[in-house]
Length: 259
Image: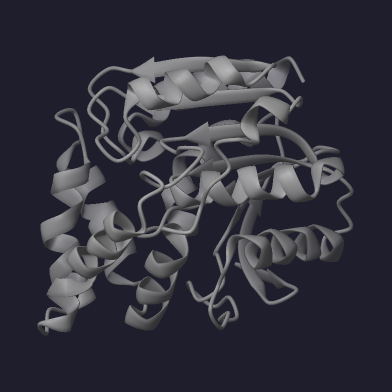
């Protein structure tokens, strides 16, 4: 593992324009282990740990603009002018935010199990979501215990025991302070009115059993984006690139081959 500008990352392969992979709330660099392994023969793949994850520096009160700025500073530290951003769940939201605020730094977007905004526009829904998501921790449950309960709920019927084991281990490793802060950040995301103006190539990948970023929601988002392609993977839940890594890699390899 390496570090640049306070961000821990793992890198494989070579290429002028790297693919920077950004994990979800319960993830880390290992969430993209199968992309690091399966795509690095022809691409430079960089998987990062978001602030507060792994050995990355923590960020006080994270916001999407701050996370986008941190990502571009990371690219500066790697001497990378432009990158393909590949994000899963909240990682896709960070990628979208970066494309909106720093479009000259983004060569393409791959959005996996993500949406253009969190929930509806009703603040009471957001407050209810945060309270419900944090309630087990408030009542004394540990992150490892929460991971054991939560991961099977967000994965699809085709997820193998190995996938469940890996995803649970990744979520269990998230510091509770980081988890609480990123949940609070999640509910602030809203780029629904901006996706139609994103003119870079985009690849949207959904899972047929994903209830966090439903396939129909992602399909509608793809329709609004001028240069987007859309793929739905049958049998996958929310952790699509981990649950259905071979299918995800085939889609991404073809997409990046056209860029």
